[in-house]
Length: 234
Image 1 (tube, helix red, strand yellow):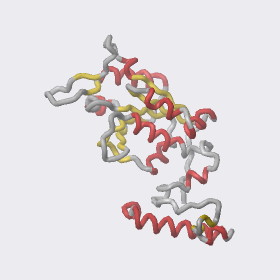
Image 2 (tube, rainbow, N blue to C red):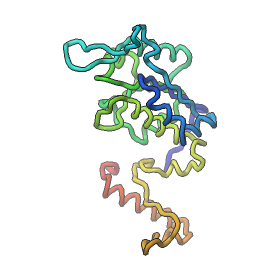
Image 3 (cartoon, one colour):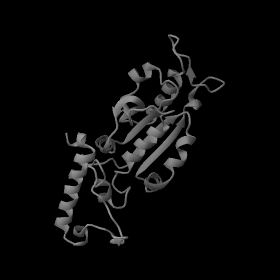
Image 4 (cartoon, one colour):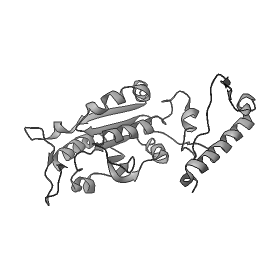
């Protein structure tokens, strides 16, 4: 059970956004900060407005055809991606979009094997289709809903991917026993005290019998998955 594979020595994620300050705090705290301090991962933010030649630093324009909203232009996106690709090779150029492939743990595991990733955050009505056709290699959605921009989705993806890189979490088995690693929800978990207000921890967890505990956890995981997320068992 779990996820075993050969990981890249150092993972680099470049996030292209018009609102870098929206993700700045997130990537410099907790697990992601630890990963970067240990030299196991790098996360770099790129302000798309730095790549436009418009004196007002605009990166969007009206859509052809007269529909409502604004569309992110080809030129600044192409300039930014081209600059990055001129400096190193990338395994994927990802666009976070509501109509992309739904992100899940299996995808996070697979992406953690890669060395360098670019994540492009959409805004407004989205990006010019030509960027999707010529520069994007993977489109990812974090759910069937629309966000104001792709920054939160990019942060979710970076967090889910980097946390399973060996060494990022001190106890690697902790990450491997998370929900969805085996298409199962996690078993219930408890901590001290063993009896609180008469609410008791299951006896098996106090038994010290490792085999019985592991079997109980598996049985509970299957039961919870069958009850709450039967689609995962299918």
